[in-house]
Image 1 (cartoon, one colour):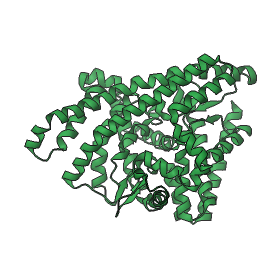
Image 2 (cartoon, one colour; image 1 turned 45 degrees about the vertical axis):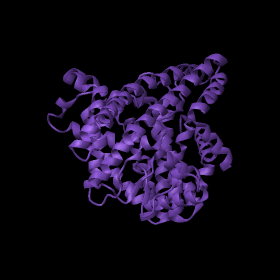
Image 3 (tube, helix red, strand yellow; image 1 turned 30 degrees about the vertical axis):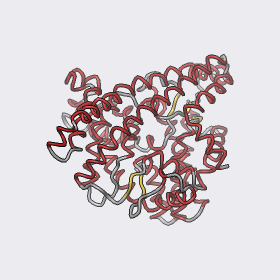
Image 4 (cartoon, one colour; image 1 turned 120 degrees about the vertical axis):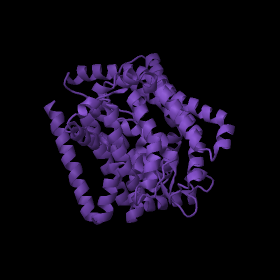
Length: 459
């Protein structure tokens, strides 16, 4: 089973999406050529996104490592980054079976009318495997590991249903799509509560500035492109020990600025390919469901949040939070996690935040600041059990340097260990005794499913 699903995951979204979308398109009545074209657009979008985020990591990584070295910012929890975290998650016992188990749960919930989301975002199933692996090493029980993964999956599906309309109304071209990714959905309650709390502050409404408003107010300085260049140059300057090194590194520093600007400019252009590919599938799905079940019946295609990370507010806020998060990691008492390799995942924090802040840059920044500050502690607290999982996978795959933790360090990753959903499940299983925590999580999952079924039936 591990070999079969490792092969599927190894193909990647760029290869599998054209296959999945072609099959799905033909099944719902689209011509083969049109379905294939839709899939290829989505596949090409994933390729482009991978290239751009790879550029961000390769350009920013060495400079940030130099900053860490110069200012002595090293902490005891090593940032593996999300690709290594995904590899660890999938190569545990839980991860080997996570895809068929979760698909089975999804099918069951669809049949009994407790969800409307068909989650085809197979590559992000590693989040469910991650929490399952951590709980497995916490409890030394494979059964509790699968329990944690399934609870996480159920909570995520329900949240995907409940937020689908808000998501679709905010992001253009996303009709019929939901986001069943627990990292993004974990921040939804924070977005709702903090946004409402900020609205209660007298005069805060004057700070209602979205990305377009920033461009009008600050001109060139409000453009994601220009901000990317400025932040890149600033980080390049910080990576120099003295004035002489700064002078010697002017070409590299300017190059880093241009690369960061390129990332900010190209991500929105690439994400338009997703919209172009999804549109025919989404329209055909709605027509088929309306024909077979009536206008009021709805199903959502669960997709990756990568579709919408090109929103200007996401880019601006993520960019501003990169240096701020580094400073927070060093100054927050008790934190032992310094995010470096995970910083490329910063964009995904805001996918489900923006629909509730309506793209407000100030609100989104404040919410991001709070959830990342709390998230650093989550990573620190989960590091011990995640390190056990990484050590086991490293022993089984000694040639895979990505999953190797340096001696004297623990392992961590901003995505998905900083998610409130992941930590809530972990905390219930660790601090509330296993059976008590499991009972609370089971009750929560059942209540959410019943409530979601009531909402579905009402519509």
